[in-house]
Length: 87
Image (cartoon, rainbow, N blue to C red; front, side, top):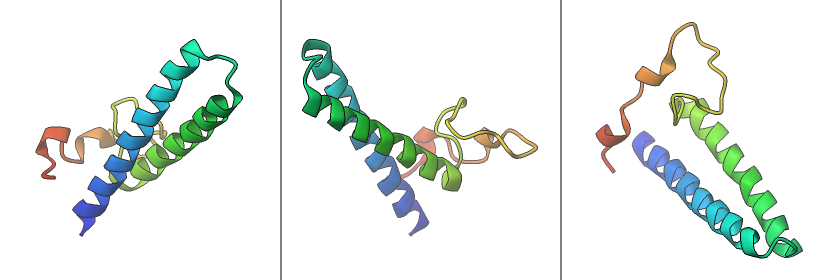
């Protein structure tokens, strides 16, 4: 059950990251599109929140994660490496 939630959260992060990248590319060629800019800002906000939520539960996604290292040890090594997760 716990692993299913982790996979669900990772999938949400991947989806939001994809949408943010696509909107970023679109805005490169349509810089005055206010609707796209508003969508990008919302997706970016949602992505940062999704990453924060994931890192609070499962630890950092990157060795230079978005969440501060508040423990007295390097938490990065506690969780399985990405290739060790069974989806």
